[in-house]
Image (tube, rainbow, N blue to C red; front, side, top):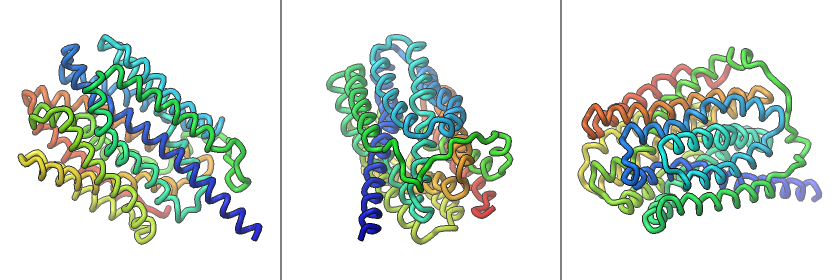
Length: 400
């Protein structure tokens, strides 16, 4: 009976921990989503060009990329809890300061610092908590729950953020969301315990990056992450502009499409991670290959659709398949790497993904200029990025 109670308590604590990490991820994705929406009125207010907007979006990912590996190493030194709390608190801080901006340089610097300080350590630290507290067979689903936050943010974010920006202005909207981020940081501090169970004690050892990088699987996943995130971050960042400028929708209508497609992503994230973790363990490579191709082709075809309803459905299905691709890929490090090897390996893979976030907005901004504002070149870029993801993942071996 005592053993049963102990297991029940551990399961309950893990549930609260997972929920706290989930809320933190929601704030991560809302911060990324908000800038894409806010840049529409900001561009009108300050006369920002497509390349200016691409620079602001890429500055965030540039900072994120530079600090992700150092954050992974720091995780082994001080533990994941401190990094998790500090990350979300800093998201609130930088969102608050962003609302006081009035120049391109200011916006670029704040977004760079947000990526470097606030975002860089959260993914590897959250995944480290799963590694410490969940058995192997439950990690894909737990990781899926965390990454389902992108679907939640994609669903509720546009419904709340777009009307908020429209009604109170982007500056006040940023300050409101900043307050929510601080509240989430406090919740994480309460629900992630300082003292962990004996089975979940973190290793606070150093491992040379040379040793980490000698594992070819790290590089396969790094380049695959670069490709898939070039597609996902590029599309997410530019979707509001595409819907408003090329499709002629207003801010709220674009928000509704964002929201519905986010719901598809949410279903894919939770349902897909459960089904794959339960029934397709060891077959992740073919899931990634197949689902990525389907999602990419759907996304590319959306460019040629004129119907509002059909466009929403096609983008939703594309999100469904691509989020399953992304979650399955990012659950692989939880199975392939352990101990002090995990966080620097995950951070390296994440850096590849963030590099995609750096390059995609800039490349798309250049393509928009080249195509006189038309998004056809951007959609060909998405097609190439998706095809590369499917090809690269074929080189991974699940078992070393």
